[in-house]
Length: 144
Image 1 (cartoon, rainbow, N blue to C red):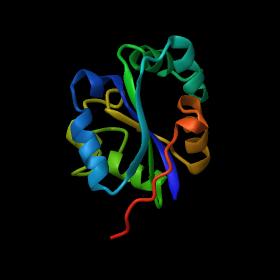
Image 2 (cartoon, rainbow, N blue to C red):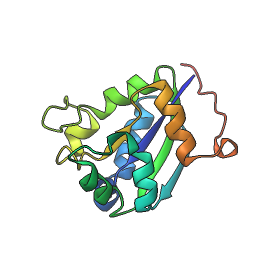
Image 3 (cartoon, rainbow, N blue to C red):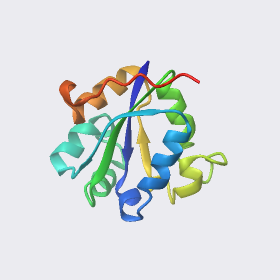
């Protein structure tokens, strides 16, 4: 089983979309191994998004990600990273496919409701950023 990180961004929390997105996650047969609300500090946001440091959008991203709490979750299933990226849809909600989270709920490229790891390697790093090993549950989803 593969794991990936999902972040419900500040706009998602502000607009009270968490339940709708969790339903979409469950309907896509992901197991949620852990989930928690976090208020990112500027320091933590800069550390998490360090890969983007120096890019024109970096400061606005940090400002956005610290304006409200976020919800972070560890999702598990076969092919979790790609399946979560497919469920999220394109970064730009205008180009996100029908039925994707960003198509349904995203407003702009920045306010696009959710984040997901872009590789298995990054998923492991991102999960470790928010969760200790002893926080994660071990779930074996029922096979249909």
